[in-house]
Amino acid sequence: MSFSTTTKNELARIKAVKRCCQLAELAAIIKLDGLIQISGNHKMSLHILSENAAVARKVFAYLKSVFGVQTEILVRKKQRLKKNNVYTVRVLSQQGVREVLREIGIIDSQGHFADKVKASLLTKDCCRRAFLRGVFLGGGSVNNPEGTYHLEILISDADFCDFVCAVLHSYHLPAKVSRRKNWFVIYLKGSDEIVKLLNLMGAHSALLNFENVRIYKDMRNQVNRLVNCETANLNKTVDAALHQLENIKVIDEYLGLGNLPPNLKQIAELRLKYPDSSLKELGEMLDPKVSKSGVNHRFRRLQRIAEDLKAGKKVNF
Image 1 (cartoon, rainbow, N blue to C red):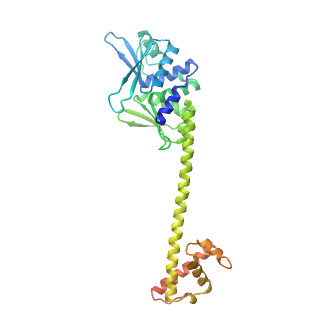
Image 2: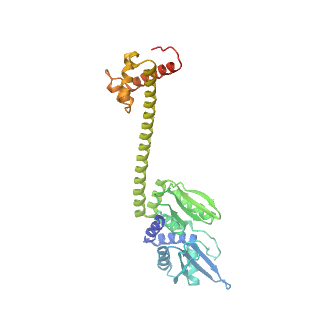
Image 3: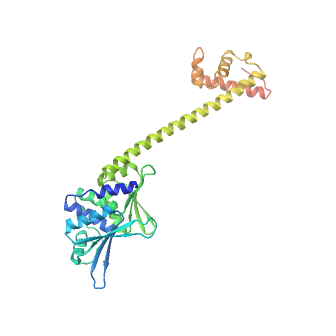
């Protein structure tokens, strides 16, 4: 089961206590997943479709508790791709359909289509949280935090997309919008923002799982960075030591190490004896001790001497 499905299952199990919160959540789901059919005799029927059984059960329960309307759940199997079940919650009563649509704002008091959710449904903080929960249940998905951090909501209506973004922005969530064919995609990329939204919707178990994976992932990335840094430094030290040994061998062949000044002879002999040691370690072996920069300065002098010897120039110590 995907992380997104697990999150939806958790949210679907949350039952709002207040009628206003149930109505706000139901309004979001109907707006995203609802389908209105008008027959030849102008009778309307309302169908709410979902591929998640828990969401369908929640819609069924809310319609009964908020409106007391007669409903039924139909199940069919998709014929393409994953062939998942599609659950349809259907409102049977003609009067019940109009009452539901009027309450959430899809039709106005005169029975004309307004096709929007009433802003008055979201005057309370608890209702706005319930509304966001319904939005996610209706059209949301979230990536497994093991991969890239990404939460998105698919919406087909531009005005409703702006409405949802306004609610998200009221909680200081920097939601952005992109187009994908005929859809508007509201998305969050930051892990902190996704965690905040999960908390607002009430998906606390999903939040804890997300945080656990994020902490483990951050620790693993930090360890990898440290290992890569250490590896790079080690490679740099080894390459420098090999170059220093080559210079020392050239000097020994052309001039002889015994003809070097004492301080250069001492560091050259130490490098031959300890080819894997760092500059700092070599400096601490000297008597008196020499700083890392002081040791590096001596090796630069040895390099110039080796270059002069290979070029046949006169060596100046």
